[in-house]
Image (cartoon, rainbow, N blue to C red; front, side, top):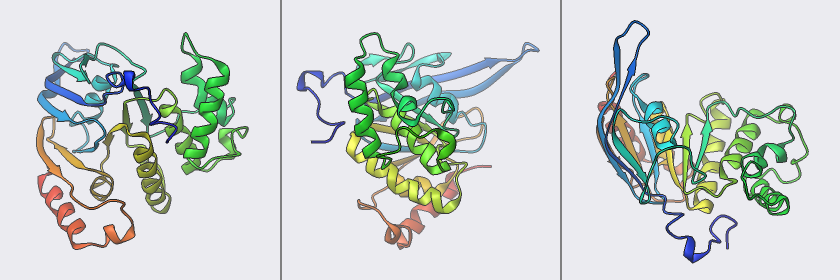
Length: 267
């Protein structure tokens, strides 16, 4: 059984990765006393284990919504639940990967991956080290645990960041344009790597991107948000068969879905 799916049945509720976004709005106060309406009355239901991508123009509130799900920001109104628990702050049930890997350059790859787990109150070094070894294998970096981030390529560093966000066995993985800084060839390679990791983990993925083709290739559903104040204007099911590969990108259905999504996005 997979490293990340070998779970105690009694922990089923703890690993319920469903996300309920209920009528969430978010306002920010400016220094001159004004108000920025970032999100307005946004609702969404994401079943556990789905891969969801979010598209929309810059400034539409995609990252704000991700931060609210992560417990890093509190909405002005509305609520978010992960499983049956209301999000009131950061949780070990949520892993986050950003566009920049933000690795500690003076830590080895293995130390970077294990850091969130070792910060826990009840962490056991032997168990964390074993988990890190398993994650290195999962992200195809076996044997590189003692390297430093500067010794790795951009794609490898992003895989380290993904492994780090998996170390606490999260029910939900939040990703904010994690491949935005990569070249096109590395980016397509990382798409397939991410899908393999997602399928092994069983986690729910909430993935922000500006790339329509990326969203279609990766996702079970694609959410489109309007310009600010952000709201959900489309929720498209991506019925392309899995596993996906180059033939998927070349298929007429892929092109049709991408064209449909493009029509929903306002600039």
